Amino acid sequence: MKPILCLTAAALLMVTTPAVSDDKAATKPAGMSLRLELFVTDVEKSIDFYTKVLGFERLKGSLNYVPVRSGSVVIGLGAAKGLPKDHPFNPELQTARRGLGAELVLEVDDVEAYFQKVKESGVKILAPLRKRPWGATDFRIADPDGYYLRITSR
Image (cartoon, rainbow, N blue to C red; front, side, top):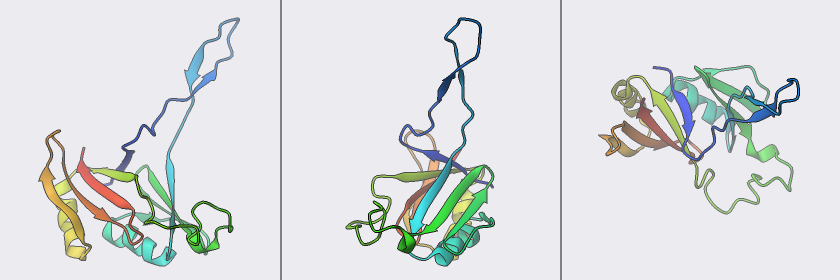
């Protein structure tokens, strides 16, 4: 039941780099992986959410930054409080909820079992488990900082 992360915007791009070859200007795909970084109000509270509710594993980090992982999904949880004054995610510059306009999509093997686990944790369900017109079954929640998560079948 390890989630896989998808971003609904065209975030998974194929990057091309010039290949070394005779006189041809051929390109080959560059290796790429994805790690999200979320700037949060309370790092420990976010670690608890991602590890205890969603089943991620805590990785080694520092006082103000801790990555969590489930399968190939890595989410870095960083303290928003420690950001430089001019950083666009500094809480003092924020006027709206974090993550506005972004949806984090976690694909799981058994969405019904995952839904039960999340429901039993007491986390508020924003949209209940249901089959969607496009064929997937999903539900929606938000993390402690309001980042919107869609948990869906593969």
